[in-house]
Length: 211
Image (cartoon, rainbow, N blue to C red; front, side, top):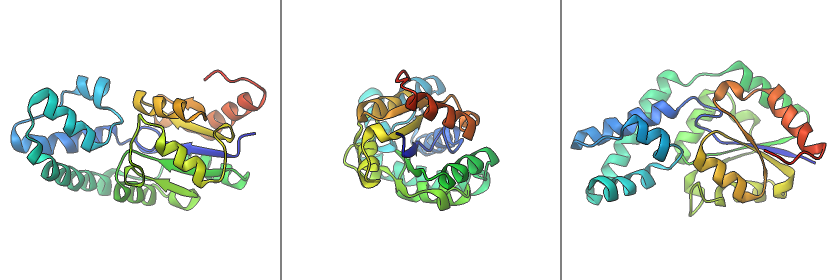
């Protein structure tokens, strides 16, 4: 029986993929580097900034000495966007509040840093429904490693088979599958609504295990 729903943040609860892309490129452009939109969608999407910078050092020769400063500037630029564009979405508030009232435990697990997760959840009015908020600062290995989801499941006091994870990108999907939990893949934030989540829970509980 499903007892908890665990959400990825960017692209699932928050339409922030473009925000992270724009903020990181703005920071990289200070030093003449950038990530193409194609590479962002096919390679970098869903990875933490630290990992993206490590990959850029290997692929494009980005000096590792710049990582800390670029990461710092990326977070500043991200917060500028968040404070102007992160707003509540009715379908998400309705989904989480209804699931909460039905007795489900709720969590978010994101490759973003803790500050970003907390601010986005507060500004989207979703924090009050969440039992746990996991960031990349709470684990040693971010997605696509399953550690983040395994920690969320453990902190909730549940087993993987009692949890449903919502993910939208390849790195997150790999992490969710490796955790052993059930999975609902969404295409964008509009797919995250109570009807879709409940339908997946009912499918699982009726014995359907295909994702």
